[in-house]
Amino acid sequence: METTLDETLRSAGLRATAGRIAVLDALVSMPHSDADGVFRVVARELPTTSIQSVHNILADLTAAGLVRRIEPAGSAALYERRVGDNHHHVVCSRCGAVGDVDCVVGHAPCLDPSSTSGFTVRSAEVTFWGLCSDCQESAA
Ligand SMILES: [Zn+2]
Ligand SMILES: [Zn+2]
Image (tube, rainbow, N blue to C red; front, side):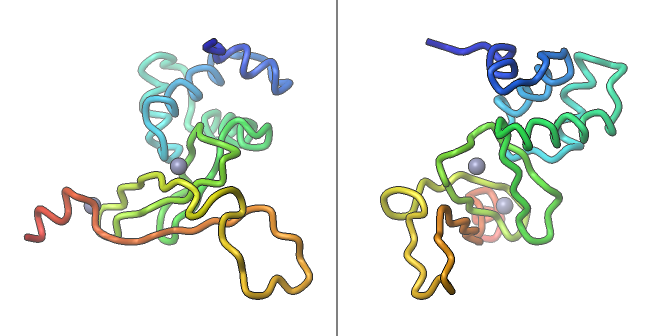
């Protein structure tokens, strides 16, 4: 059963506004987008939307756990709909393309630190760096 985006919003306690639905919809088709990228897509549908309102919506959706925010070093914050599975990312060090990497081994936190300084560990966030296939081709 496919849950609609407005059901998703309401089950997270958020009002299903046109802006929130458009932002979620944009992230379904373009995972790992920054706020500018989301804004460009949303503005096509909702021309009165401002970049500030997209930032606010992304913050609300992140706080509600509907969107995950990642921040690879040197990149703007990126947002995606894939939440709660402790997946990792591979980032192209040349063009910044981002791909998903499933849990490295088994389930969250999926990596065993040799020492946790007394913390209980619930998730692990790993960024793998390399060259995407396009950049490998242009480098060859
Ligand atoms: Zn690349
Ligand atoms: Zn991801």
